[in-house]
Length: 354
Image (cartoon, rainbow, N blue to C red):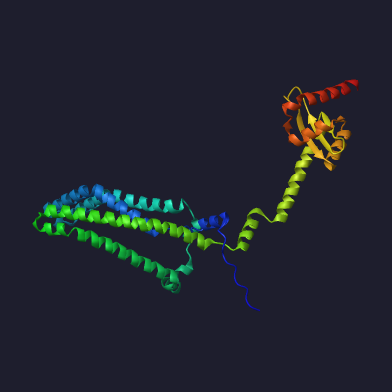
C-alpha cells in the first residue's frame, strides 16, 4: 500500500504550544538587532565619554613614564602600582561595560519579552556530539545564514567605501595638521563612520526581527489534527465536558430544590411553571425567588411544597413573568412588588385562619 502523505502544518500554533515553547526557552531571537543595539550604545558611550577617557589614558601614560625607577626594579612596588592602575581602569571602563550588558538584555526583552526557562539551561549530551555539530555547520539553514552574512558585509563595505571616498579632501589636508589636530579629525571620521554603519545595521536588525518572528511561527505551525488534539487536551473531550456540565447542573438543581421548604409561597401556572418566593420583612427588602422550574421540575417543586406545607397559589401570568425575568437567588423587580404583595397578603390570611 502507498504511504499516506504527512498532513501539512497549515494552522497557527495554539496558545498552549506557544507557552510550551517559551517554557523550553524556544523564543524568537535576533542576533542582528542585539549586535547593532550594542554597537550603537558603544558609539554613544564613546561620543559622550571619549574625551574624558582619552584624557584619563594620557594622564595614566604620563604617570607610568614619569614614575620612579624603583617601581620597575622592586617587584612589590611594581605589583602595587600595577594593581592600583588596574583597579582604576576597571572603575573607568565599568560604566561602558554595564551599558553594553544592559542594552543587550533590553534588546532581547524587546523582541521576545521576559522569560525564565530552567529547561533551556539543561545539559544536552547530543549537542556535544562533533558529528551533530558538523551537520549543523553544513545544513541548508547555515548556508543561508552564511550568504546573508556575506551580503551584509558587502553592504557595510559599500557604506565604508563611499563615506571614506567623500572624505578624501580631508585626508589630504591631514598632511599639514598637528598630531593633536590629526587625532581629532580621525576621531570624528571614525565616529561618523560608526554612526552610518550603525544606522544601516539597525535597519537590517529591525527587518531581521520581523523575519525571525515569522520564522518562529512557521516552525511552530500545527496540523489540523494537532490543533484538535491540543484543544481536547486543554479543554477536555466533548463527552467529558458534557458529563461535567450535567453534574454541575444536577448539583445546582439540587441546591435550588433545597430552598423550596424555606419558601413563603409557590406560584404556579398551573402545571407547566412553578416559582418559589421567600420573604422575611425583618431581613429582606424585597421578596426573593429561591427556585423555579418548568414541566417536570415544576412538578417536583410542587411536590416538595406540599410535603413541607408551603402554600401553592395559582397565578399564571405572574408565575410566567417571574420565571422568565428573575434568576434563582435574586429579588423580584420593583414592577412586580404590588402583585407579589397581594399574593403574600393572601398567604398571611390563610395562615391566620389556620
